[in-house]
Amino acid sequence: MICVIKKKSYLKSQNLKVFGQGKLNGIVKISGAKNSALVLLAASLLTNERIILQNVPRLTDIEKMSNILKNLGVNLVDKNNTLEIDSHNISIKELPYELVNGLRASFFCIGPLLGKFGEAKVPLPGGCNIGSRPIDEHIEGLKALGAEILIEKGIVKANIKGEKSRLTGTHIKLKCPSVGATETLIMAASLAKGRTVIENAAREPEVQDLCQMLNKMGAKIFDAGKEKIIIDGVNKLVGCIHKVIPDRIEAGTFLIAAAATSSSITISPVIPNHIEAVTNALQKSGSKITIKGNSITINPRELKAVNIHTAPFPGFPTDLQAPFTALMTIASGESQITETIFENRMNHVRLLNKMGANIKLNKNIAFIKGVKKINGMELVASDLRSSAALIIAGIVAKGTSRIYGLEHLDRGYENFESKLKILGIKITRELNKRNFTEKEYKIATGHDDIPKRKVA
Image (cartoon, rainbow, N blue to C red; front, top):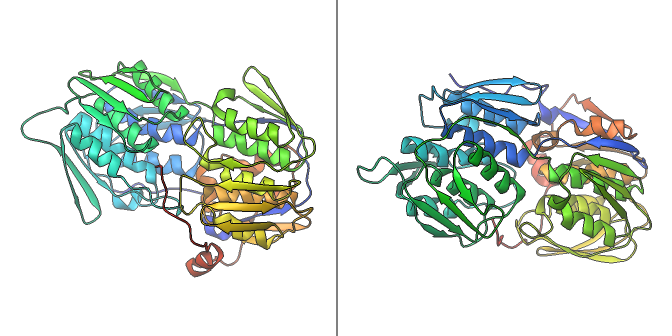
């Protein structure tokens, strides 16, 4: 039987009503990192023993991944942002298409399943429509470890070659520092025979969090967070208790919202060096940033235009490009926002211009002339981070905005509007009598001439 997501009313029939020209004030609690929790859930498949995962955010993506694990035979108990995971009764190694289709992170399961059981069948991944995210790096890396892989009718079928029972350690050099490929190969290599070296590895905090949990489970992984990661394979992994790191993207989103509204807030808990590129950009734009332990306080002043380029960690994160673009629409002067990661991640530009922003888009570069005000509107978000950008714009705008596309927002922000309410923003979730059709969604999210991505 397929486990299905059980959520409040269908999200495409909901919107957020945002009352503009608001101010934020107070302290906001940052949730666990979505992008870390998803891969840690997949990593739990590597052991027969119990994993206790703390600080897990309540998100639709997390619920989808949990349902995927349940369909594999995993016993999973949810207790107030803590998941108890018992994988010793896994009975099938094939992920159901119905659950995988909308969740790109589901593809992470191929590494643990192949490494532990020697076989896996995983549908090609889905997720936000922000551009191509090829799995070539994952596939080539798994082949180098000794896997035989066939892609047939949208299903990736993987087996260990010949009569071997384990993958074999090897040297892998990634063409680009793909986070997904790095994480998939680390998990697969943790149970391989011998040493695996991954060069040009992703350095993101989420990769480091994965390695930390795996090492607690008995893995031997060295130099996580560096460009070359070394994994000495072990015979088995054990259970552990692990706390998910704070979500650096959520943290950055609230800091940007504060800067946009000239508001002083404190965010906590955070790991400050995880968002150093963001706080540096905010300081250049005129905000005073104060770091004290695991908290950051922002005191905005006159908002000035600054240029940013998205880049793999420790560069400016692509996931905060849309919110920062919304911020720059009202900054004094001219700025350039260059997207180097995903080719379709400028969908918000057209919508911000509808609100009165002055943005010219040339391929992957947004040229922004700051304006004194933008106006509230009804808008449909096309992906997770554009939804956050539009909400920030709605808070800044004159008048009232209605933001649709909450099925994207709820994938990655835990209780977003509730946290904004605590900070003093007037915002409510509404249930509509009609849904936006898929055709209307496509019309609302058009984009021009965006080139192919360079980095996964």
